[in-house]
Amino acid sequence: MLLAFTNFLSEYVSLFSVFQYLTFRTMVSTVTALGLSLLIGPHIIRKLQQHQVGQVVRDDGPETHLTKAGTPTMGGGLILAALVATTLLWCDLTNRYIWIVLGVTLAFGAVGWVDDYLKISRGHPGGLPARWKYLWQSVFGFIAAVLLFAGATTPQETALIVPIFKQVAMPLGIGFILVAYFVIVFMSNAVNLTDGLDGLAILPTTMVGGGLGLIAYVAGHAEFAEYLQIPYIAGAGELAVFCGALIGAGLGFLWFNTYPAQVFMGDVGALALGAALGVVAVIVRHEIVLLVMGGLFVLEAASVIVQVTSFKLTGKRVFRMAPIHHHFELLGWPEPRVIVRLWIVTLLLVLVGLATLKLR
Image 1: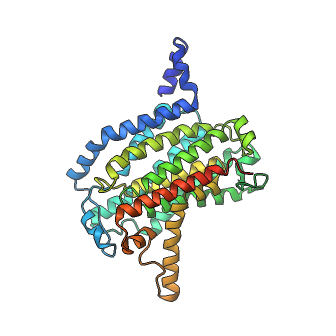
Image 2 (image 1 turned 90 degrees about the vertical axis):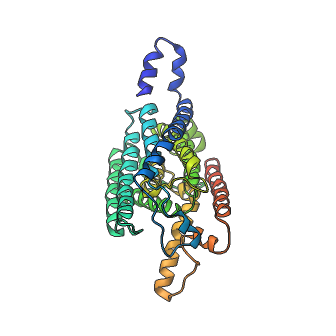
Image 3 (image 1 turned 180 degrees about the vertical axis):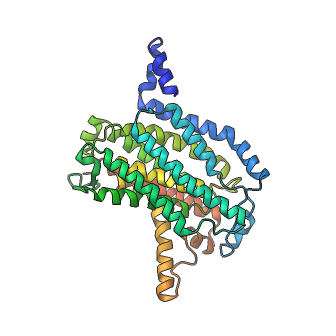
């Protein structure tokens, strides 16, 4: 919206031509989303408190979490509001990738909203049954994968790229749909599993989002893509502006979500943000790098899979509790220590993932 307005103004005042640059709009979108989050955050928190939209805590969780019961949840709505509004303001709305990413983000957010609503209305942490949650995630993930496959115009848009070994590009054909579907749905659930401590999920999400934004920028720039020997994806650069909005909205939410949290993200935020990371990575053809940068999310999901599998097969637990951040808590680590150390791990993994752009 504002992009079109600045384009009009640039015909009369050359200063406004700066908004044509992706780098500038990415910075502006970050600041805009951050400002919106900080501005509307207190109002949304008050509304959640007034309507008694409080966190329902698991009975089998760490005892220290019992004090979190009643803390306003569904704060992911704040993130989505700032993210969507900023995207509409500063992104090129003729770019089809922007609409696909927005559609996936809002669709998965809707699934999370229903899950959160059922938890609160029933006063039970069960929420939406897993089979129904997975069904709707699968439907939306599959639709996104099909749209991306159908809209592909070059072979590299559907090839699997192996980091470092940049000459290795495996044509996926229709198998692209399966890969894209898996990445989107997996990341959605992985971020959701990570969202168990104050601020634990949101800062890594913004870090990974920042890394993907940089990749989107170079992948959408023909000269940079050729120099780095990565696939050139026409139009993908616009996703850098979306990622900038994600960073700003996430940091704004962290202002209220940092320990001790004033508000929790809820599934409405976690499922949406995880899916957003997944679909951006699919578009820019860096799914494997996403799994590296988002190694914390992968570890959290893997710990649950290992725990459940081990208990069903042997009757024994590998971890004291899963996801693994609870394991560290039960080892005696204070919650802030667990959070900050996992933040540091994510920062290192994002740097490793970005390093693969240059290595070959």
